Length: 253
Image (cartoon, rainbow, N blue to C red; front, top):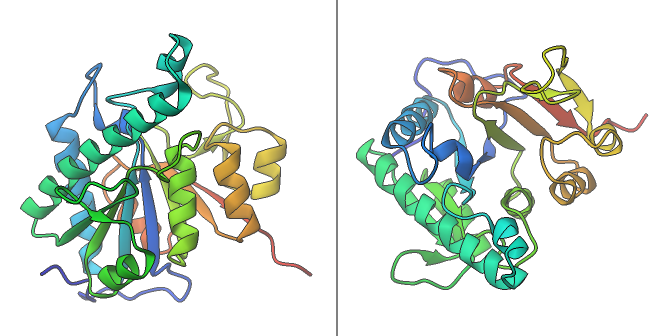
């Protein structure tokens, strides 16, 4: 059994205890055009294993873009709902791959799906998910929200709010935070260290979709956007250190 324990680390007062980590499907394919990169899975498992050194409860939502992009198939004439349901199945494939790699690292995992697939995953039940976390298990949330027209960013925000998470962590591959413009297209793009939900919405910054951002804003849920693949970054974020970009709701004065 994988237990989240103190191992010689002094925890900060403002350190989040319960977190939801959002992984994009694109990040799971590595340099490939399609599918899963085994080295990427190993790296993710290694970084998550480090978090076992601190008193945290971690759950993960994975996208499915490495296997399926519903919007692209809609453009080709496929019914949008059908395309989105196919995308939900892709997220389940990713969750099972992550589960396998995490268990190889002696991390106890439970996968819960918003779609009813009892042969491969538990049904998503909020109270059961919270109980798993309290018992020191990592929970993988698969199947998106279970509804079409909703992104996995929105699924991550929804699950974070539902399980009373302290923070939503958005892992980006090769991007260490939010910028005022696309850093891949604009070499002069400036990194933003902190910004409010409202400012991020009004400036239409493309870090996550507006539905997810609005849900977090309405529930005062902070978000951190960071580069997962920089060693120790995940541990540092969960330990309360300043990493990447923080999106927050300012306190009323």
